[in-house]
Image (cartoon, rainbow, N blue to C red):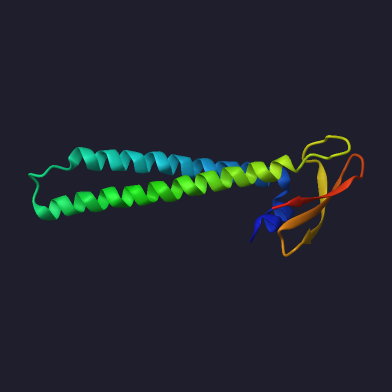
Length: 126
């Protein structure tokens, strides 16, 4: 389910909160991957048998890959949530996230919304 479906099901505020929590969970994963990478660097020594050296290098490589993926996911989710939140303000009465979802346009990439206070209509790009 895309962002439009989740916003329709949960509402904007809960969707926004969950996006931020999900992005920060990826930040925690990044920190754990950094700890794993540092631990691999601490354990590695040339005096280990070749098999153990390869295991440590494999653990370091896995930690690095997990770290890069989690960093990219963290930044994407955080920026996407902020991008959508910046558009959630009514241009007429400046109320934030107090709108009703009218329609999904362009296959869920745009939302047509209406302000609950003043009735102003605008679109939000996802």
